[in-house]
Image (cartoon, rainbow, N blue to C red):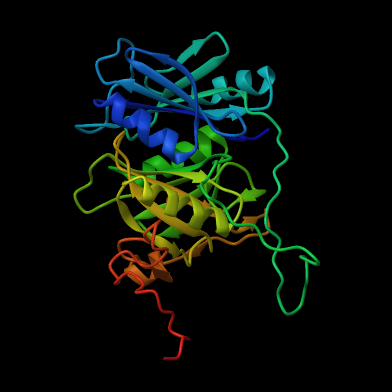
Amino acid sequence: MSVLGIDEITYGADDLPTCRRFFLDWGLSLVNEEADQLVFETLNGCRVIVAAASRAGLPPAMEAGPTLRQVVWGVESEADLARYADNIRQQPGFVQEAGRIGCTDPNGLSVRLQVTRKRQIDVECAEHNTWSSKHRVNKPSPAYERATPIEVGHVVFFVKDVVACERFYLESFGFAASDHYPGRGAFLRCAPDGGHHDIFLLQRPAGDSALNHVAFTVRDIHEVFGGGMHISRCGWDTQLGPGRHPISSAYFWYFKNPAGALVEYYADEDQLTADWQPRDFEPGPTVFAEWAIEGGIDGNTRRQKSAAAPKGQFITDRK
Ligand SMILES: [Fe+2]
C-alpha cells in the first residue's frame, strides 16, 4: 500500500480570466468552466482546479493572495483509503466523505486521499544516444512547439516546521525520505520505488507557510525547452530557467503563475528504490542549480532573452 502520486490540486485565485489563458497556454485541457471555477486536466487526467478565492467551501489559504488551497493524493483502492483513514483519524480537520478522506497537514494545507482517477497513458518520449548506449537509431530526436504536461509531478511548500511536516507525510501517508537539507528541507517521495520527490518542504528563517511551486512532468528535456519557449512567446515571465538541478538531476524551467507562486516544467528526474540512501546537503545556489539561464529563452528568437537578437548572420558565417 502506498500513495501513487498527485491526483488533483486546487488553487484559490482572484483573476480567473488570466489564469484561464495561462493554463491553456501551459498545455492543459479545460474540461469544465463555471463563473467561479475552472477545471483543467493534464494528459493522464490529473486535475488542476482554479477557484475564485471567494468560492464557497474552498479550504482556507495558508498565505495572503493567490495560492494552493488543497492537494489530493491518489491511492489504489477503497481498502487503502480505509487503512489511511486509521492513520490520520487523530489529525486536525479529519474528514471522511464519499470517496475521499483527509485532514489538515501541519502547515495548514488541506490534504485529501482518493482512489486515483488518473488514466494509464502511453506517450512517446525521446530516446538518448550516449557513448555507451545508442537507444535512438535511424530516428531523429523530437522537438516540441509547445508542451502538453503529463501530470502534476510534485509540489513545494515553505513550511513553519519542516520536522513536523516531514513526520506527518512519513507517518500518515507512508512517504519515503529522498534527501535533506538538515533542519531546513525534506525531499519526499510517495513510495520507495519512484521519482526523486513528490513533495519538497522547505523551512525559511522566517518560518512562514507558503506555496513555492507546482511542477508539471513533461516527456523529456526537449519538451521542457519547447514548452518553455511557447510560454515565453505567449508573454508569460520566466522566474528561472531553463536549468538543471543537481539534486534529482531534473531539467527545469520556472515561470510566474497568476494562480499563485511559481510553476515548473521538468523532466528526467532520478528514479529511486528502497536501496537509495538519503543524502544531506547545505542549501546554496549551486546546490539548487547546476546551471540555469536567467530570464529564459525568447520563444521567437530562440536565443537567451537578455541577449541581442540574431542579426541575420550566424557565428560560423564568413564575410
Ligand atoms: Fe520542482
